[in-house]
Length: 289
Length: 288
Image (cartoon, rainbow over all chains, first blue to last red; front, side):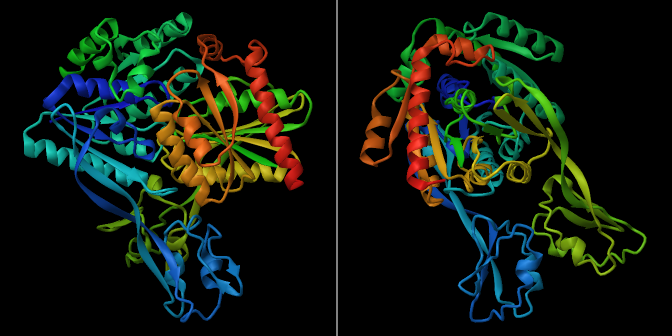
């Protein structure tokens, strides 16, 4: 089974629009996973019909039983996050500050502190308009542990692909280089880097590729909005050549991406000309990897 | 006063707003701009200045000293992050999983896991006229952005008075790095675009900021593209739209070269002035 992960470093390069287009072109032959759980948008283009959903629990939060608390203050003393201030003469855990390490519970002399699993989001299994299935998720407001939810979405997508005999999983990753991205990359067979010819696009592409290299995964690149700045596009070409990354395709700046999105469509359903052709060729190259 | 520029969706123009707003304000007032998107910091690509300070930032992790270790395994037992493991006759530490809680170290009966500093990123402080610019960059392979964001915020608190206007370029999304970057802010400016993705992620960001009980204003970037649903949502939910930056290919081109927009596009300057009026009004009402 092949796992193709699409990432970008920088947000707003068109990663999700392109991922959804590739998924549309791949049709029934793939399972789709939206691992950008922080700002999951792919469902807006795939029209999922939810088949099932499940709460996701991960990470711990300290809770103090005020009946048992003798106000010795040991918990606050050991907490590195100053998450247990005294409010109205009581030691109270601040959920947004608590890291879930459990040190406070270990030192509490009266066992007044319990560590409880947190509901940090939900994941869904849906039927999408291309006749295949998609695994996606919604992270709870301000929740921690997005990396673990990413891993959950990916594992569910893998199990599903195995069950249904699909050979490819298409994964929409998240921006940045932190834990959700690391989670998206682990186990990937091929990475598609979506970038744009701007100072920030290039800066972020280079950083995220450093991370990809640490995983030793082969990568290809799609330059979106390639005609916005031809000098910067050349700079990207040089970088790709130096790093031996395949240039999969270049897509011109086109407001039809947005027009398609407002209709809940991928660009390949909306445009039957040049961009459709570019993306079809891109998918042909990617699926052979 | 602390103003955080945030957005749910990435690439909506947080960095454009942060750098242009800070530079325009700095024509008249002392301003501190801090890039808290430590995973992919971009503000520094648009701001130049003289480097006045640079330092490495560290997180504390345990290091195994085998001499006195009795291999009791207590360290593994107390670690909630699987960052310390007893493997045969050895204790292994996995630094990227460690959250630095000190439990294994301080609860070790033989003091065999002293905490040592491990570099997680770099902080840099530039100055250009009235503008102080601070940026931190996470080392590639480090998974946790939050400790570096926290230390960067501490640096700003230690070096500037409470009255100085501070602008923070926050990371995208709604999870822990965003919370860390916004939880001390007085005012949150959410940058979005008038598209279904923009609206979907704006709603998530608004819900998050409501949870934190923050005052908010919305800036619509690329105004004119897409549809009217962002405006409709903001009106229905009583969230002020404080600026509408027009959708122009020229803006994308200027941005792509790493240049500020407002000196070249007057329409953008007008919108930044709208943001400044909103901030002054807030400041007067809250006497910050």
